[in-house]
Image: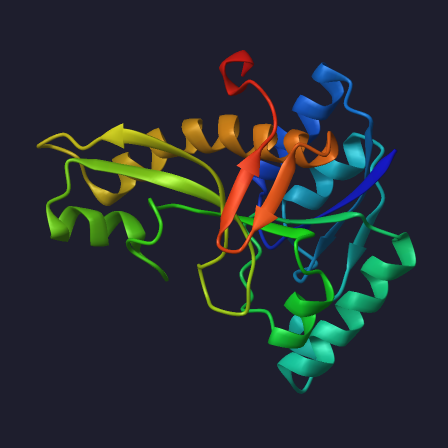
Length: 206
């Protein structure tokens, strides 16, 4: 049974979607811990209500990114995580940390990568005048918002959309594709080949 550790900084709505999918679909996996870099992250309360152990590694108490990442890594490795899931974790991770979990750490980004990296992706999409906007689940690499793509979903941009309305509509899609991607990892159906991810399953079943 694989152990999953989820990292959050806020309410963790994608974390909640993953936890609920794991319970509903009875994955052969354990959400072994939810870790936050902020002690007041609302998602910690949800995790505790589900009986999931929670840990706080408060980022602002560390003098450097490297020292924080090392402390975080020690907590994750103590748990014995097979997969690290970033779910609204608002930290840029050091290359050493990412390398330590190569092909075992995933993230969801609110754009159709490789377009619109960084912050304010919904406004970036509106400013660019795209007709389709979306979200991407990918393996994390040292390059920000890059890495082999596992899954994507898109929505059509309407004339009256705002950054907030795009974010809200896209979140519904995120709550579908992120649990789906985690499940594929749990079931050993993902194979990384260079910059590509091969999915060894009939994806029509999802």
